[in-house]
Length: 68
Image 1 (tube, rainbow, N blue to C red):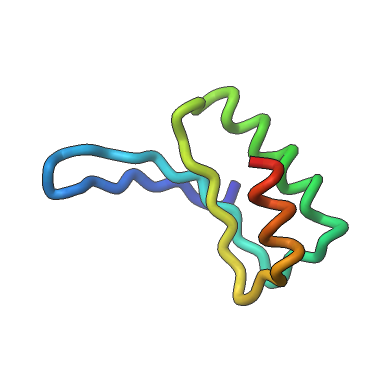
Image 2: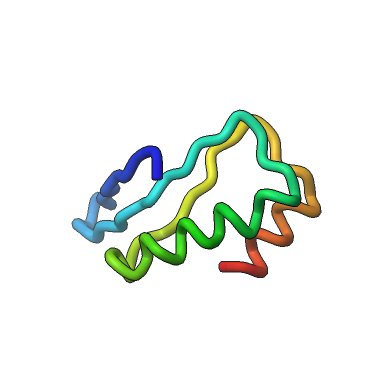
């Protein structure tokens, strides 16, 4: 995890984000990143995992969605 953030809506609802940043994310690395998120979600079960990178190919996006 590179960062975490809590965002709030005007109505007061909040969401916790777990943010992982990468210069690039290749398909071969999706399982590794998903595994890292799984471990963190054990500690913060309601958090939303976010991958921040300059580009995600459609295939990598689909794999990330499939893995949660």
